[in-house]
Length: 193
Image 1 (cartoon, helix red, strand yellow):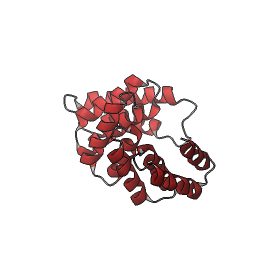
Image 2 (spheres, rainbow, N blue to C red; image 1 turned 90 degrees about the vertical axis):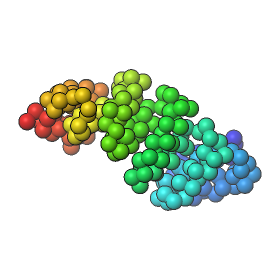
Image 3 (cartoon, one colour; image 1 turned 60 degrees about the vertical axis):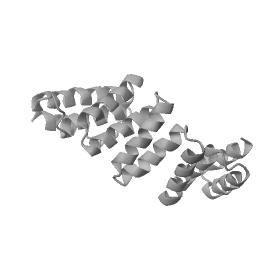
């Protein structure tokens, strides 16, 4: 635990090489501690080495299968590679072990959307919002789903109205945090056409 704390302190100070060295030493001492591999995966992401990050996340879930953060990050790397099927498996594992993990719900929604499973994607985004009604990213991604995808059971008009309503909810939740170039108003105008 002291080794993890030391590595985390160096990570926060952006001394990633030192954090990596500490964690690699920790893995030699305690190779059955999934958290060490997980933390090293985060370091590798900061060092822009996605291959090593993935290897560390895979090892983390191999030695400690119930590590939701590692499953989520592994899912993200697979998602980025458009391997939606395996990304979904890892997001579901993360959610199984931490049902309130809103980021994993959001990521699951996006992976399902990428796979064309629009109804399931809608359910995942809504679950993230149910858990945290102020989760702006979930509102935004749900709005994009309505705007861009054919959700079964909804007419085009219904989808566009849901997109407008959800974008307005997003704006309400994100107020004060939106970037000047935030596209919400552009998408609302687009949906009203």
